[in-house]
Amino acid sequence: MPVSDHGAFADTEPVSDPIDTAGRRVVLVHDWLTGMRGGEKVLESLCRLLPDSDLITLVHVRGSVSPLIEARRVRTSFVQHLPSPARLYRHYLPLFPTAIETFDLDDADLVVSTSHCAAKAVVATGRAPHVCYCHSPMRYAWDQFDSYFGPERLGRLGSAAARPVLAWLARWDRATAGRVSQFVANSRFVAGRIGRYYNRDASVLYPPVDTRFFTPGDSQQRPYFLVVSALVPYKRLDVAIRAATRLGVHLKVVGTGPDLDRLREQADGRTSFLGSVDAAELRDLYRGALGLVLPAEEDFGIAPVEAMACGRPVVALGRGGATETVVPGVTGVLVESPDDNAFATAMDQVQHTTYDPAVLTQHASRFSVAQFEHGLRATLTHALAGTSPC
Image (tube, rainbow, N blue to C red):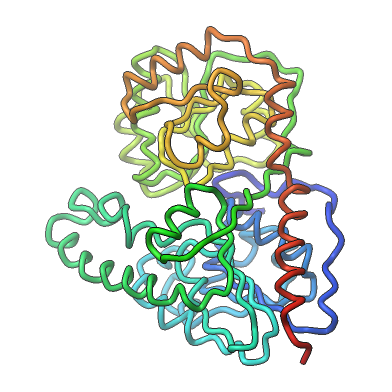
C-alpha cells in the first residue's frame, strides 16, 4: 500500500452519519489525488458525509489514497493522459485552468471543492451552490513564487520565463473566485489570505486530525526531535537541520519531496531521513520524540496537532496557522524568527521543560474529526437547503 508524507492509512471507525441529499446530485472536486495529506483527510470526511457523491480531479494515482476515497466514482481531466502524470503533474500547471474548466457539471445540485490550486475554479451551473473548503489561495502564484520558481530552483532564465506564467495564473485565480458561493477556510490565517487575494469573506473550520488514533503512549522519550513534512523549499527544513546540528541533538525527518538531496547535503550524521512511514510508525515517532519542529509558515499544520494529540510539545514558527494551534508555554514554543539560532534556543528550552501529556491531548481534541465533521455537516446542510431538487 502506498504511503504518503503523513503516513499510510489509519483504520478508524466512521464518526458521522451521511447527510440526506434527497436524491440530488452532489459532486466533489479535488485538485489531485496523489497521496494522503491534509487535503485528502478533508476529502475523506466529505466522502463519509456524502457517500453517493461523484468525485472529479485533475490527476488520480490509483492506490495513493485511502479505500474510502478510492471507492468514489472518480473522473479525471485530460492531464491524466499526458506523459507520466503521477510524476510530472506539477509541470502541467499552466494547463490546469483549461483542465478544471472542461468538466461538465450541468446536472449537479451541489458542488463541494477542496482547493489549494485549481479546484475552486470549476464551472458549476447557476442553480448549484458551490462550497469551497480552501486550504489556501494558490501559494506559488501569489506569495511563494521564489520558493517554487525562484532562480535557485529554475535558474535565472527559467525563473524569468516562469514569472509571467504565474502572474497570469494569479489573475485567473482571482477572477474565478466569483464561481464560489461560500468559502470555508482551514484557519483564520487562510481566511485573511482569501480576503486579501479574492476580496471574499470566509468562515473558518479547522481541518480534521485523527485524535482517536494519535494518542499518548507509554514509550519513554528518546533524545531526538521530529520533523513531519513534505520536502519542499517553503517548509524551511534546512532551519530545523541547522538548529539540531547547532544543539547537538538527533533529528528524524519523515517525508518525501524534491528537496531531499539538497537537505541531505546540509545534514550531519545526527539527522535521519526516514521517507514515508505507515501510520503506526508515525504515531510511535511522535510518542518518542522530545518534540516536533515546524520551521515554516503553515496555512494550518496538521502535524503539530498530531504531535500534541500524542502528548508531545511543538516548536513552531510563530506565524500562520501555528499561532492558532500552539499555546506558548502550555503545548510548546512559538519562535519569532525562521532562524536556526532561534530554533536551537527554543528546542533546548523544550527538552528541559516537562509538559503534561493530558493537557496537550485535551488541547488537540479541539481539532478532532468529530468536531470537523459536525461543522462541515452544518455548512453542507445549509447549502443543500437552498438547492432545488432535480
